[in-house]
Every structure is written in C-alpha cells, then in structure tokens.
Length: 89
Image 1 (spheres, rainbow, N blue to C red):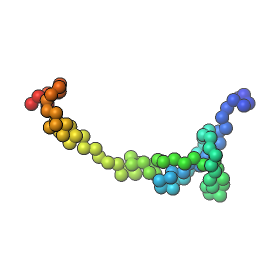
Image 2 (cartoon, rainbow, N blue to C red):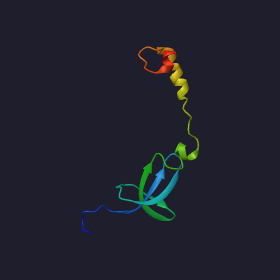
Image 3 (spheres, rainbow, N blue to C red):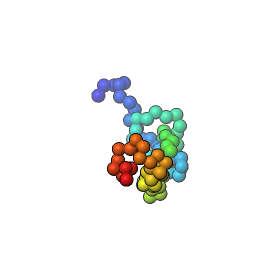
Image 4 (cartoon, helix red, strand yellow):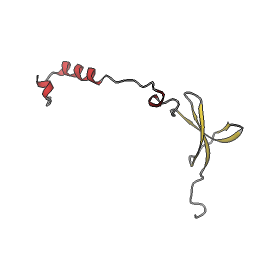
C-alpha cells in the first residue's frame, strides 16, 4: 500500500446516547471526542440509534394502521379521480 493516501483505520468506541449502550469496532470515522471502555481509551462517536434502541430489534415497533388510513381517505374524497375498482363500488 502507498503511504499517506489511506485513511486511519482504527478501533473506535460507538455510544448510543438513548440507552447508554457502548461497543467498540474498527472504523475510519474522524472524531474529536474520546471515551473509555473496559479501561482503554478510544476515539468516541455518539450515535442516536443502535441495535439496542432500534424499535425493529427491540420489538417495540408500532404497527401502522394503513387500512384505516385508506378508508378515511376514501370517505373524504370518495371515487373522484380514483382508478381502483374498490373506489367505484
């Protein structure tokens, strides 16, 4: 590899700010902050969502009532301008 053209690939501490979850992985991301994890100091990257706080992984996701939205739309606008067979009935 040529010297001076590749980014610095090193261990970085990522911290989920919503649930204080921390993990270390390797990255080339640039940061000014530092943090300590298991007695060792790492460059720190603060994130908003991780696997510990994401609704899909935690099972706390909301179920969207799309059928209710469609019915509400059809009641409001009726069959005007619709090309679906359901709206014409």
